[in-house]
Length: 486
Image (cartoon, rainbow, N blue to C red; front, top):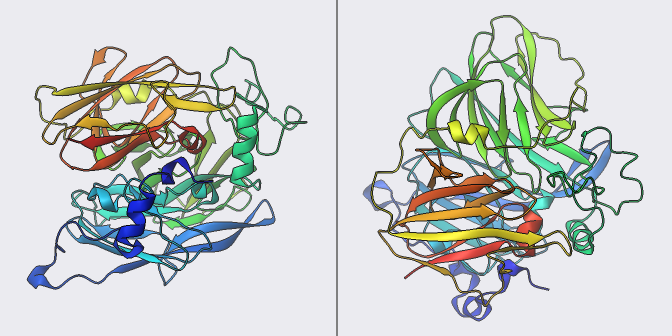
């Protein structure tokens, strides 16, 4: 059965050929007409250990083993993706603005890459920041087909150490079985509202599912995961990163989870949030910051001069489960960190979002087009939709035109929060529940139950673009649509 993301353009794909799926839409941006060498990214099977058990997952690595890709703004993005797994795949450059044929969405941008095949990409990088790459093919993202994509720019300081942290949720249950259980309706809604130990509550639930909780509570954590990972590791054996006592560290936090949101807890460190989704904001200081699925946070911390260890933790929304890494200054001692926080965290809200202010907001101009998008669906049968329309190949794209200022009015009619992502464009949050403000520039924004969030963007990248909830099983259930330039 084809995924909803692969049902379009099958005949077109056959006629153009796999090698042309990502053909360059603009000339290489290199001096003297000499193209820069391609970076090879290989899609691979690999094995990791989770809770003392081996697990077979995917990965995106360069030939020398480098995880993902780090490059610089202004350089051409010249990449060849080689598919070394035994099934079709295609990689989306989350947060970038390539020509639409290079966006990496099967059936929209072009066909997937077959096993043993490859695709070439070549486009300019307009801006820097913390981004990521992930498969948009079927449910491969749940099996960790994701990697960092860091674009350095003038914001990067020579006296600053970069530390990239990729958060992920992991289950030993195959993703198709998780999805099938969700659609059967077993174990819907959140675990016990207290967020405490759910081992008793989970008794009798289907594999990969969380037990139903009180109907009055917002729905959280539909999938009962076996572990939560930070750079592929749990707190039973966390990654430790050596940092300079008295030095400065930039934490690049990427939530590559399929379904799980977190609260970032810096413990004893004071943090300065300087960018979200790669785009600069007026800095906000704190020790705890929310991060929804697919979002990124750039947090600058000053390491104290004393030798010590400093855990950087991610606490699961509405629960006590946590993961993270440890920064180790000098010969600081690393103590064992509990895998459960002292207290359950609260559901994510828009409190921080309402405080964020873009350092470089969109220009002030009239709005040319408004699309109102109701986030709809129901837990029974696990049906998710936009404006009560479940995505299928016959759903017409929403129209936009080059040069327009477009606003998307998103109203959540469901009991779940939805991180909404627009491909090929950055947008600015301009309203929450009727209050207008010059909010953060992003590519993914959380819309909690019952809330109204408005974003604005400039239609400056002609093509056919995906717009969807970034909760993987919501996307595959139909919470997806497209915009097309007319």
